[in-house]
Each structure stands twice: as C-alpha cells, then as structure tokens.
Length: 362
Image 1 (spheres, rainbow, N blue to C red):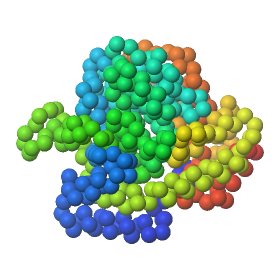
Image 2 (image 1 turned 30 degrees about the horizontal axis):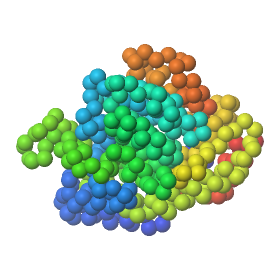
Image 3 (image 1 turned 30 degrees about the vertical axis):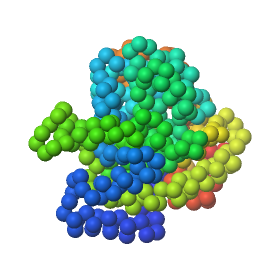
Image 4 (image 1 turned 90 degrees about the vertical axis):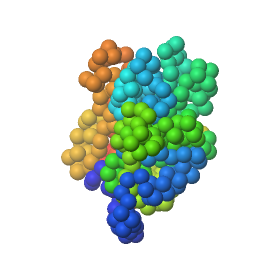
C-alpha cells in the first residue's frame, strides 16, 4: 500500500483543475493577476485575517516574513528542536541564529515553558510550528512575546484548517507562513506558499519583497527576490481550497479509526489531540522504540511509511557551525529515532486503515 495519494481522482476535481487552467490560459495573465488576487482574498477569509500574500514556496514565506519583521544578523530566533529543517534554514537565511527549544512530549509542538526560559537580550522572534496538523499552544507563547517584545511567526505548513481554541491557524500569530507543497492538506500542483497576517505594514513589505523589492515597476526599494505565487497555481489552489474542509474531516475520520484500532498496541504511542485543539492530521505519526524494525516489517508487507524526521535539526551537517552535540536536545533525538508516519490521505478507505492497523499490531 502506498504512503500517500494526491487524490486527483476525487470526483469532479480533475474537471475543476482543468477549468482553472483554462481560465488562466484564456486570460493571458500568468503572474500577479486576478487568480492570485482572488486566492489571496479567499485564503485570508478562510484563515480569518486581513491579508494573504502568495509567494513561491513555504521556505520563502518564512524567510521573507522574517525580513519584513526586520530580523537579521546578530538576532536570535527561538525555534523547535523537532521540526522540518526549513524552520531553521529560514533563520539562517536572514543571518540570525536559531535557538532550539524542546517540544511538548505529548503533541510534539513547541513547549511554551521552554520558550520563556530561552529568551535572552538578543532574542527577537519565535517560530512555533503547528507540526503534523496539531496547532501550537499559542496563547502562552504570545504572552511571553508581549513581555519581551518578540515577533511571533507561526509555521503552519502542515496545519491548514487546524483550530486553536476555536481560532484557525493563520490567525494566531503576528504572521503565519504556509506551504502548499502538493502533499499538504491544501496542496498545489507544484511549489507554492503564502503568508497570512492582519498587520498591514508586514503585508505591504511582503508584497514588495516578493516582487524584486518593488512596489512600482522598475523602482526597487529593497533587495527583494522573485518569489511570486503564479496564476495557474493560484487557480488550482482556489479549486482545492473549496474542498479542504471536507478533506480535513476525512483525515480526522481515518485517524479516529487508526486510534481505535491501535489503542493499547504494545509499545506504541499514537497521536493525541489536546482539548483546546482541532487536529487536521497532515500526518499520522506514531512513536515506537522499535521503529526501525516496525518500518522494515511493514515494508515486507508492501505498506509504505516515512520518517518525519530521521535526523534532528541540531545534528544536521547544515547546522554544524552552531556547535550543538548529540545529547543537547534528548527529546528531539528520541523522536528522530522513534517516530513513524503511517499511510494517510483523505480518500483512503476504512478497509485500508484497518489493514495497516492490523499489520502494525501484528
């Protein structure tokens, strides 16, 4: 069984995507046109904010937002020790230093108490990651940020449609970065990203930075980049955004089935949903001290799995210059050794879930 399916065979979807592509082709407008404007309006409304700014990918969403907030050389940015490397790479890209904080052991998201303890006079920002589809416990992080004058940039690349105390990710922090990589809950058919915010100054800076640092053609106010969500991906995302709530509900149903089927399995820890959260299960991540053996056994049965993520960020060669060593962040290292993502996609059948669960229990 495959690990993931893009779901392009969902009834009616191909026709909607083809119609979206035709709209763009017939318009003759490929960059910064009406499809992007419409998607930005619709996605901002979905997230409950005033602005959405489409960019080329999720990493650019993080980097450009840090730049828009004035984060740079000599600054420290608090990041999770357990996350995809893009969170750390964005901090490095603006010349700042990532300062890792261990996750909450239940949700694997950034521990608010650790954030408070990590603040120094050089701290300028925090990047909480709503990992695997579960939102971060944001209110105490925002309270810490207010006390210390910090910018909070949520990384919601994996949590489109998740809720925190009834509020959607995308509206919780000063700004939020999204990826629309094809496997995300809201996926494009190529690379794409966006930033959401209700801060008009941040939004204006982002629009300028994504377009060569220009608000006015051939006048460049800053050393910007070319990172624009193109018209055809915006049109595809509009089609898929309308289907996102139903797709998230399907994910939740499949994961509830996983949870029931795997309850009490020897040595296995299954995902939790905090009482203040609505998890959208970008991934269904279990934890086992026998992870490698479990993955190998499932592979022999034709069941695809992935590890998110097998090397903790502080042990990645890209961050060796930061001077971290094995043992510095034991929970991140334990998760790297023990987590395993089981097959999951919205159109996955209950029979498929039952088959995977039975193989795991065996």
